[in-house]
Image 1: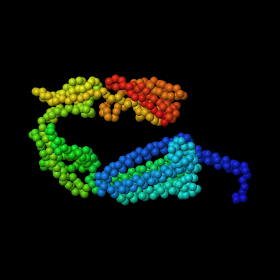
Image 2: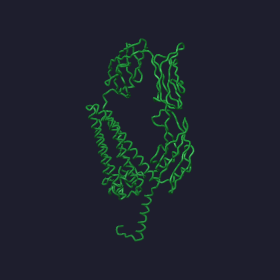
Image 3: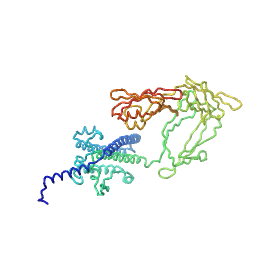
Image 4: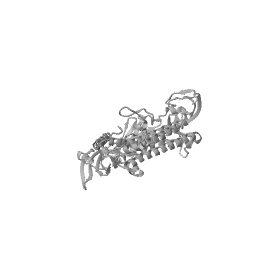
Length: 518
């Protein structure tokens, strides 16, 4: 065959066959390309969320380091090293990503950084990227793929060295480089071939961003493992709660109130043995509750012992002493959600007087109504300035005034209008079409179960230089509005104006939602 010479026609036929084969190999549908773009965008968002959560872990770690530098210091230093190792390899992976985009698009690295995957023209091509990752070697060893593999191997070995050997087995390092990997025909491949050989640029970019997510997950596991090592020899607490311990449970006018404020930790899985006056107090969820009948007036003191199992498995005893003061009944009237009453809605309040049964408490109000609701009370007032609640104790024989409390009256605040989970700004077209409804939301600090109903609104857009307006009844977008949105281009603005909402005290005019279609 060495002396065989092809005719010009045969050469042309052979060339056309090669071109046809290449075209068949490149027959990647638009839907698949867009799917890669969508998945890549999701991975990028996930990476940002992972980074935020990891930074929160570092913040908690640093706080413990500031509280106990001697104990936490060695683990904190390793956590800092894990952070540096992760940032270094992510910087390297980003460099690979932008370099392959730069070579494929024939643009600068800076331009590659600013170009989203959906705008890359060669995202469905693999010739330049395959040459970049393999550089003529059949297994990728001479190209960037082989270099990337070595960097990942070095990173995995380095982070594992930060953790005690007996804890390494429980870590999920991921980033499998050994496989086995196979192509579509079942032929065995190495990691480089499986992920980069004849793989389109869109898939390359998506895979590199996934590697960044894998690195962040490894970093999170390493930091969590190091953080858990801080308290390996301490008591095992699984709940933390604020505790205020006053010097006295009663302060008279003119005296000084003093209290110790702290965060207390407890082990809900171990019930301590608590003894007071030789009597054992039942415990549940790690807490023992002591009750005593308050008979005599004045200072009452009690002492006891708490027995718990220590980290070494041996029981340990802790003694304590506490006191409380018994006094005659007094009145307490308080709104359970705020220090004001809202007009025309049910305002829950608590009314209590120590030593008096709830059935013998009778409240009245100067404006509106007050009624019992379950274990509490509910007040409903009209719009005004103030309302005063007065309470009497009636035991069936005598009636005695207990006192009164004054409250300001406020109008229920306006809700805010949302659509597609936003009150304005950039919004994805598909998210806007999927939402299809304006939702009124009360402010976050408004603790009432109260809802408004959208009555009407005006849909406004600009098309061909003309202002287009569609009236809307209720909160749903009409078909005309949905068609307008479907035909909108990126950067076009849409306004939802004159939003009218119906509430418990009538209609409210809500603010305009100004949207930019993405």
